[in-house]
Image 1 (tube, helix red, strand yellow):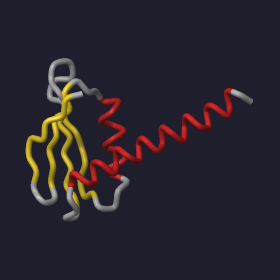
Image 2: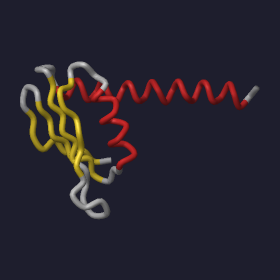
Image 3: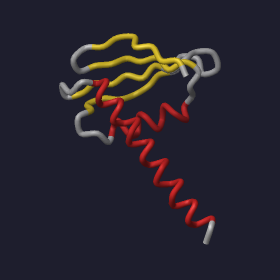
Image 4: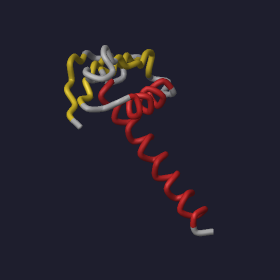
Length: 92
């Protein structure tokens, strides 16, 4: 994955995620919009098959980079939890 920060202010962030699809972007967006510090979170893919998605975040003043890191860590925790539960069920 290649990630480019296109713009950043105290409360806004635009990030291009090269080579990614709706799968990751939907997870990130969902995690972000559940965060009370986030006012707006969405992504855009101009041309699905040839353009890279751009993720936009606006926060309540919280550093948007920290908010994005937190969202990624929440997704990792959910995947770890799923792996644990699935492993138990598969071995039962």
